Length: 169
Length: 389
Image 1: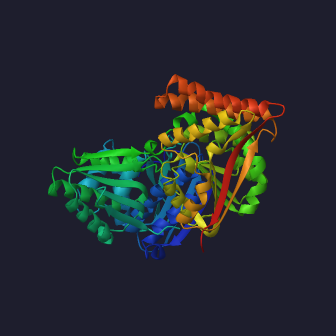
Image 2 (image 1 turned 135 degrees about the horizontal axis):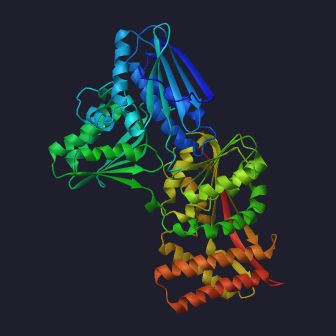
Image 3 (image 1 turned 45 degrees about the vertical axis):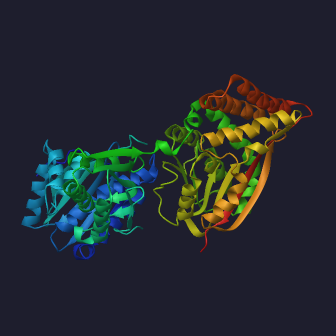
């Protein structure tokens, strides 16, 4: 389990909670939650549409990962913080041993120096979709810092600190 | 809210181009049967280079991207000599970075970023020295448009989009005068947007979203705005119908689109009317040479009807030297002379004799504007139309 690298940004802008079985009942919820959250958190950015588009991509990949890898009972909570320079997404999910093992292993891969090669390999070489692929992309392409926090009561929190690239704005 | 699979994939055989648009976020490859059919058909029908146009692909998850990588790999196996060129847009932040990974598959794949070619002749308008003149122009036209906009349907508390907002001064005036519930201002020029944001900040205007975007491929969802404006812009595009298609798309059913354009050959002045008229007729020809139509104003009705709008309203107004300070009018004409005679005519390869006569008409227009008994005019056509419910 890696330590969280940054202080949580002060500005908490959004909390979404959903029963896991409900979330897992429809793939479209990933897209809908990502689009909704992105529209809200993009307010008062230098370029709101560009920010929303990128943020939606990031959050959608996280939610799709959780959709594929979660323990079926309990609640999923998504918290979004606005900070400077990075924003933070926290996804708290119910977990059992296998779920925990998946995320711990994915964190190791996502923080490895050759994460870009791992993402490319996952993308190009695997006939069957690799459930880590979204996390690898966030680390490789968005330079997100990913970490896990163990909570009481068989949940863990996936913490993603990210600076949305505004170089083209 | 867009659904996970609200995308289109169309193969244009004439252009050997697959056009992807919308959002592709499938759970698995089995949801992409139609996309795969399009890809297969394209591979079979194409020789030489196949273009994969992703300019309007707004979202793509990794499951969808894997399907595209499979397509590229399959194309390489079936037709080893086939080249694939992927066209991305700089306005979609992830697009170039993500699609560039396809180049790892093989040397037959190239990835390009589209944008600049769509805006012929506009670099000169992005020159920061031109900005004060643009502000003066808006000041002059606003005197008319402030009264005219309500007749075309603009009311307070509407959701408004200003497409091709330029330096953002019109959006700021609309914001102050009409208090829209939302005001999105989009332009493709980063220097113009930077200026717009600075002006908004200086004036403590916080309610305008200034956004970098391509008017022909907007990252805005369908049916989002009550009132969409696009001023003095259709005339600078060689394909105005593409812009109108987007204005139609983002306008709510029952909402209105408002456009302004010029007919520069109708600029006039007294005294020295003949010289002035000759020069502005030549301005129209000069713009046409650069594939822009500065005569578009009276064609607005046809363009709006062809784009699918109804309830078209067209009116014209004349900005004159009698509106406010005549020196403002003279300054605008002087800037036109600099750009049209000093840059565009030179670029076209015009003779010194032609350019001297061309400049004289602008000088005569300036003289008319500043003459104690003179009159100088610049006509503008304002048109609006409703998107059918």
